[in-house]
Length: 273
Image 1 (cartoon, rainbow, N blue to C red):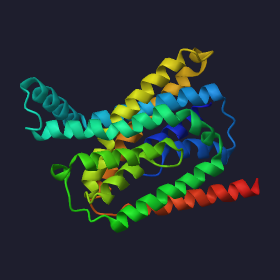
Image 2 (image 1 turned 180 degrees about the horizontal axis):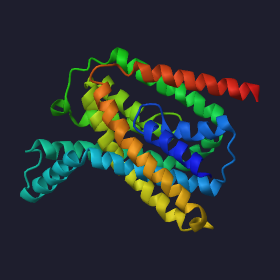
Image 3 (image 1 turned 180 degrees about the vertical axis):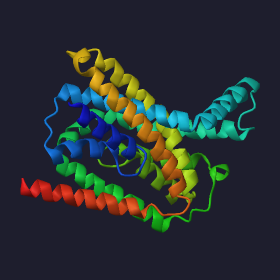
């Protein structure tokens, strides 16, 4: 992997991890479109590092919320006063919402890994993302805020997040869609989606980091990979900031259209080749 490729893919990861257009799809499709020959070891190391970069970005952006939730959970448990505070309740909503994705990752990860090598199938899953977003925007009433959320809301959003185990189904797109279908407003659905991504991304990153120890010649291409890590983190932070402002004024349907266009381009390239 060259420095230019690392920068491009770092930008791609930073943008697509949080915009509802699937980072996993773009990390598969961009090299496929440009016919980049990336070794399996390099691709694995890069995926781990850029995901950690975007994890750092979301933690920094929501640092105050995360700290308040953690303090609320600890204080509530220590005082034996469950659900007395707003932060305590949100903490347990976050925990519940991460369980479905965790289970899906443990049970299905190996079974769907082959899909990452199939750009055509990834494009098909992008269409699934497009449909989810479009239906959620059309059906959702968008009238509820975080204060109105309950455990059923968290569970359903978590189930939608679990769909993102398939490459091409956007994690943010599916979980935000789950929130909209529960009639949450866009800002609430997006914020909750980003916060519940943190435990999943952290667990995946730690598991991937342990596997890095088995990669041969890691030190040789690690410096280039670090560039991707930094770029993905910076771009990821900016993309969260932009999206949270965008959705206060605009529907998510634009991202649905984008997913359809990307899938169509991929189908055409696949047919031509």
